[in-house]
Image (tube, rainbow, N blue to C red; front, side, top):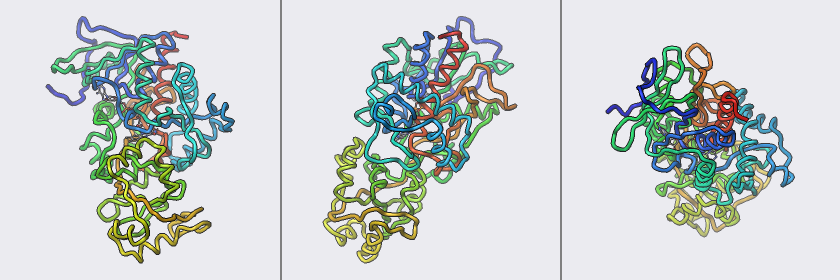
Amino acid sequence: MNTHPTVVRAPSMPDGTPEVPVCIVGGGSCGLSAAIALRQAGIEALVLERDANPTGSTALSSGFIPAAQTRLQRALGIEDSYQRLIDDVMKKAHGQAPLHLVEAYVHAVTPAIDTLERLGLPFEIVDGFLYPGHSVRRMHTMPEKTGATFMTRLAQLASDLGADVLGQALVRQLWIASDGRVLGVGYQRPDGQMEHLACQYLLLACNGFGGNTQMVRELLPEMTEAVFAGHQGNDGTAISWGQQLGWRMGDLDAYQGHGSWAMPQGALVTWAFIMEGGVQINARGQRFNDETGGYSEAAVHVLAQPGAMAWDVFDAPLLELLRGFPDFRDAEAAGALRTAADVPALAALIGCDPAVLQATLDEIRPGHTDQLGRRFSRALAPPYFAVKVTGALFHTQGGLEVDARCRVIDQQGQALDNLYAAGGAARGVSGRGADGYMAGNGLLSAVGGGWLAARDIAARLGAA
Ligand SMILES: Cc1cc2nc3c(=O)[nH]c(=O)nc-3n(C[C@H](O)[C@H](O)[C@H](O)COP(=O)(O)OP(=O)(O)OC[C@H]3O[C@@H](n4cnc5c(N)ncnc54)[C@H](O)[C@@H]3O)c2cc1C
């Protein structure tokens, strides 16, 4: 049996194929947000998910979702606006992000968060630091600060609202009529059998191609050797169909990297420590980048260092900050954290010349801007703490070109009538390469895009 995504051109689905109003491929945060929005509108929604239980890259993430003008922000007295978030996203993407999508997602993610909160998801806003590019506190997250707990609650809510999620259903066939209308899908069951489902509307919510080694080699050559920290189901299914049908694609060379992936433990050391004064130092004892530019582009800088690695270096106040993040606690529990009483001990740990390291640390002082363009507001004080890290690929940001309603754009530039894509399956909002990614762009697209697509479909199906 061919397990690659294929396109089946046919006038109709096989006789006896069951039909649903809306089929969603992929049960990550995009697919489940869409299913919830559809159920809210009284529409039947069936999610086909390759895993037994939906997790996706969302469950591996920190679950930080940026949104402006939410109920929670207002309650906390945080002044923000749609335009401010749009401007922040566009600025981080050097003006290269598709404005129609940035605007559409920003306006959709707020009602999504507000509704999910009203339905019982206990959102909080991340406190204590701002990620690069964000001008105000707007990262909405679960109290546990994990994507796993966000996914657990989303899945429970979708189920409570009556959405159907069929696990172990690997969608492999896209059935399409000669006029471009999508008829349905074929999906493989664990026993290898192919089953079929017809639908009036199809939403592709199956993320990008970060887990497809061949596609990464072709489209993101600079990340070929990088660790992939996302979900293996990010195998490029949607992009493969788009390539086969000649649909328009956007920003296929864009991605979210991360320059602080603990090695060999394989855990995230959150960038909060950088924003509050921590640094990255290479095996020669030198800094190599203004880290405050962003963690995504830092992946490329770290991979370019000797051994494709660096050391995250920080002190006691920053250790306390980091311990507030479950990812870091996992890394620490796995043995990633090293302690050095003074500069010679830190140099011995790193394996560099103590004099070189001392000169590097001397540059870190209040009010000083170093040669890399980073301005420091504080010095690091001994004892020092260090974690060995590498650059990782988190998820791809390029994908199917979609309009402001998330309808897929075909070869001629026309929106396909009944095919939608959102989240990592669609073109993202980060422009090109790694450095346009602003923290939260992934879930902004997934939750905002899923919500937007579902609301559009619901309106077309005549729902409230
Ligand atoms: C370590 C890490 C930390 C991150 N932290 C953040 C963060 O804090 N904030 C943020 O905004 N972004 C973050 N991201 C990125 C974020 O996780 C993604 O952008 C987001 O999860 C995408 O959501 P999605 O629903 O599109 O995809 P996913 O969550 O990956 O869901 C896609 C689903 O589709 C299923 N699927 C795929 N193909 C098929 C198929 N053919 N048939 C059936 N099912 C299929 C998969 O099994 C999966 O369940 C992080 C990523 C990583 C790896």
